[in-house]
Amino acid sequence: MKKAFAIILFSIGFVMFGQENRLEQIDHQVNSINSNAELSLNEYDWVKLTGITTDGGGILKVWMNNNIIHKIVE
Image (cartoon, rainbow, N blue to C red; front, side):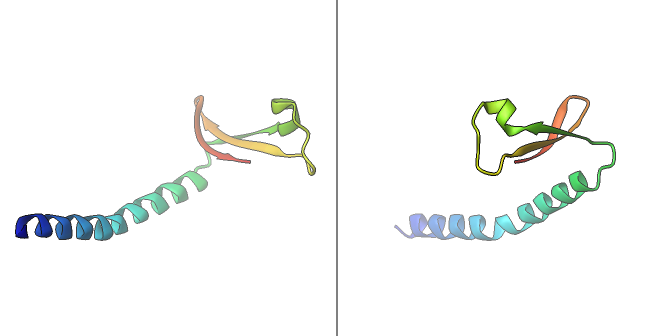
């Protein structure tokens, strides 16, 4: 029982404190994508893509490089 309790506590600690570094890595990746001047921006009309008319319309923005999508904003 003590081993199971110790394993549970270790797992909880690992999950809680292991996320800090991962969030910094994600922020770094987002910043590198946003500052990359080599990416080309393509904009698509949402109504033409889906055939669904929305109240304010919509534009799908896609940042690409060599046919690899790096960022999408709706």
